[in-house]
Length: 85
Image (cartoon, rainbow, N blue to C red; front, top):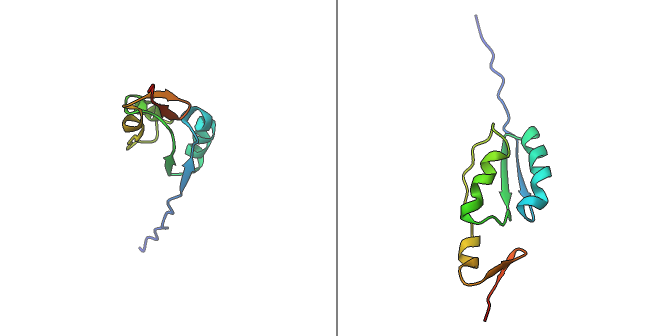
């Protein structure tokens, strides 16, 4: 008996969120259609990255944030940090 195995295609997408809350609804939809979702510009600080683990229970996250270094010397306003000086 010969068994045939169909190769499965992995579907992936890259998505620029333009901010976590701005892009969250689209991110939910992408998780329904893709196996891997790469996101950029979530603008979350390291202490907020756990929010990405709550988007879809079927996904695992590997996260980094560049926001901490940007905000270390100023006040976060919008997506940018501004110095008080």
